[in-house]
Length: 205
Ligand SMILES: [Zn+2]
Image 1 (cartoon, helix red, strand yellow):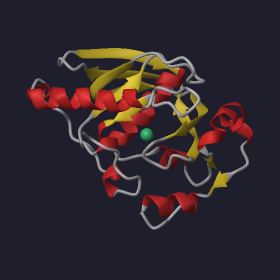
Image 2 (cartoon, protein in one colour; image 1 turned 120 degrees about the vertical axis):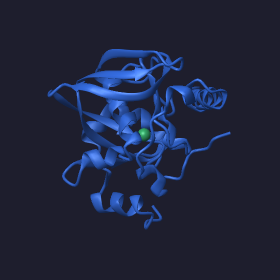
Image 3 (cartoon, protein in one colour; image 1 turned 180 degrees about the vertical axis):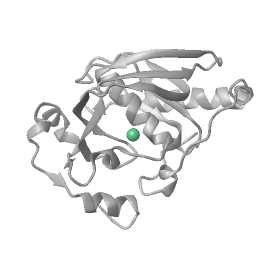
Image 4 (tube, protein in one colour; image 1 turned 135 degrees about the horizontal axis):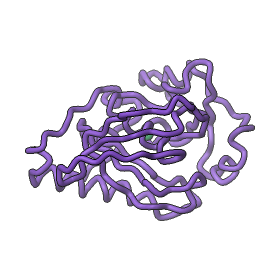
């Protein structure tokens, strides 16, 4: 079974490889997809806790361009839609309209969140697990998840998008319900230099 790569691992900063059609149709790759589905679903039991609405293969040590996105989740993550797999996803279009929203990531630190600028609407082209190409438009929370997960395939994590002039928050697990309501006024900040230290594995935070 695959497990999460430690946040300080430099593997999370690598660019992942495309999946060929031949590889996609192979049994090992299909089994890999099933196992990643199981990992992503495994975190979805308790909606009072953090809910996994997306997963990228490099998060579990697979350096391939495969992501899982909940295409029906709402902004409060109370109503979950359903997880779908997208192979070799590319953003064909990104709206110039950008929105600020909160994000966290299992591959950063469970307690680090941030306010991340993302395009409001994206057009995604990807293969399904049978190798068929689809092009679909997503907006709001779902567009945000796609941008977050596709970034993982490029070795980019959400604090990198926040940047040195942005806002990173520390949020304890039991504070999540409150954070969902008050994230815009959250006072417990993480500095940019702390993130850089965490990223390079030099911090014990
Ligand atoms: Zn992530």
